[in-house]
Length: 278
Image (cartoon, rainbow, N blue to C red; front, top):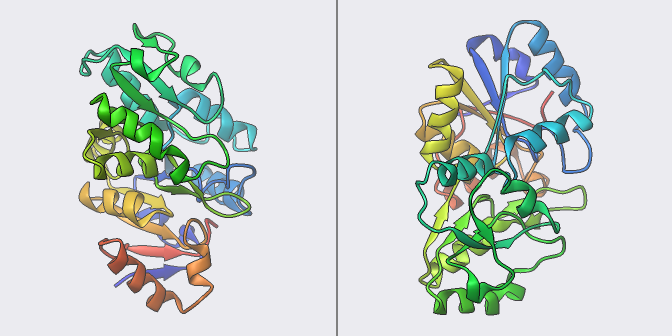
């Protein structure tokens, strides 16, 4: 049964390293959540190792810079791992055969910046590509807007490499769709989608290798990705109720809502839950 916490400090000493999701846990994409900086600084001072594991299509360095720009100390996190970093590494190591990518990005230039150091071509048209790089979606995107594009990619039999499997991301004004929504839609249409990031095991093992084998706690607000992935990796998990599913917990009690959500998402119950990181 899930244990509900008032503060993460209650159980921090049980773990060698605490691994945190980014959006919905540390910040809402615009600003840090209330006590997040304070409590993590306290844990760091007490000797707890901290790391970030994020389903971000961008590489690790820009994500670390974003976190620092929001007020978190530059040396707070021992390691930052992103799904975009994992995909970049696989292309660099020639584990992916395609070399010409049509990129879907949140902001113009994101893909060019991400691809630095890779011997690949970013094409201007889908017809010239051998694969699709799905790393972000422009603000305001809606799934039906992409139906025609997905049909064209399917007709061309292009694989889609999705470096952010999240279907939704929390924002200050409410959740927005994320690249994973397109990736899963393409797979449902019969296309080939290769996902990088949580809940898939390789990214958890990659972080374990970087940190050394330890007792790890995964902190996240996505039952599908953070909690399911953490459990599959053999980690304990802490579910943040005030992130992606905040509205659900306003409708009914904690245990009732958590049970319903875990059933809906086919997810084992988290080890712990907390309203927000504090």
